Image 1 (cartoon, one colour):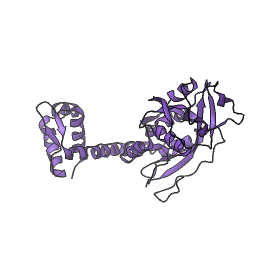
Image 2: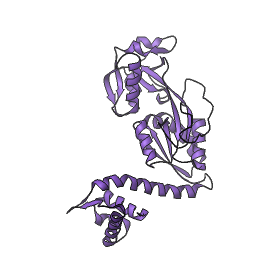
Image 3: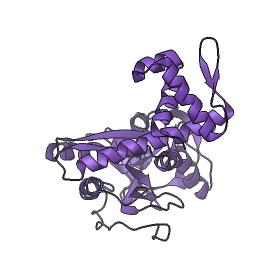
Image 4: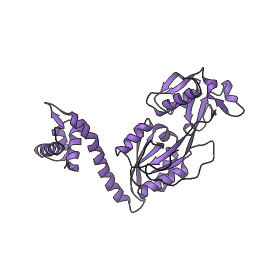
Length: 313
């Protein structure tokens, strides 16, 4: 059976690209490292690394094994972290995974207050462009807690955080910006070229879906790599944009209107296993502090639900 040490050796050889450099980093002799790699290959039933004159490369079996090796090492480190922090909230480390828009709009003020209250607890943030990559990273053991759109077919505990509302951003001199109801129908923007998101960003897919439901396919005037740039480009007159209302910066030089009908998505926190006390404390703090929907009063804070039969919205 493979050991954690053997998996660590494999990952280090891959990361350094050399048995010599890996042995130096691990503070072991090269023969000892080679012996452990051979033992790992015997345990899994085939070669994992191809030894080249100046480097190493993964075999097909090695490419299949490597992600599981990384996840096992991450889970082992997380086990030690959970044990260290189980006595309270004075110290420890929490790894939080999320999507770009949540790290931009919701998390900064939440983390500011958390840091002030729990200065000894470190937060490591992992950001992903869309919900599918976030869920895959969480399943692979990359973080303790995921914060983002409700995951599909998730078997671990989930907790609904609330409903995030979207706004259409226009320049202040746009004829539609003076709507007395502060709303705009997406269909009225069908002939516009939009400030769009780069392919792969989950908000690009969302914009395409809601526009198709409104009867048109949005033409892109420009596509932005950074989510934070989208409302600024729209306010500058490059085209309308659809953004989570909570990412619109203070003192914003543009008009934010509510789409008619409203566009919303449910955000959740989820884990692979029942959350430990630190994760629960952070999620409680997130649910109370996050301004998911600045256009409405906050919703009540739900409790954790377990497993695949938990209600999903």
